[in-house]
Image (tube, helix red, strand yellow):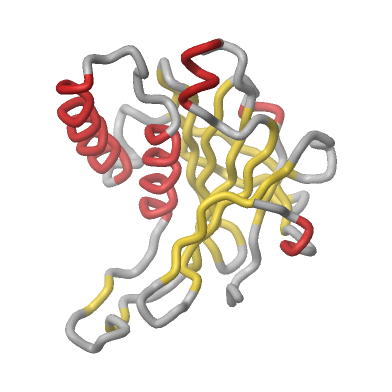
Length: 188
């Protein structure tokens, strides 16, 4: 139901692919979605084998100008590469928080890390990011790239969309992205 092309890893990746999160506005418009590659991230798996998960998730965000909200009560900001960076960063955060952390501290940790992800996404030209050029539909495309102890995050743009990606256990340097021809082939 999306009115924009979805992206995933190109055909060189032959492993498991799965449909991830889909973001829908109040009026039912698909705003963003993600396609996973490799292992589906799980905190239970991390607790058993933190180094064993190998995944890359590509987030596609519709390129939207500022517009009225579905209920007509406000204005939504335009989407941007920062939007893709935030979604990728929060995606990585959601599947990598320390499972051994005391329960009372988890929410404080999540709040702190979420604020940091917002700040980083808002400053893509800042020192927290480097650049990485990867093929998107065969064309060299620049991305903002960042690594941390939890994995990596990147964000850039393609025709009509903003792209984000995150992963762990798979190097971002060897990836290539392309339009997904048939999203229906991805099970959830």
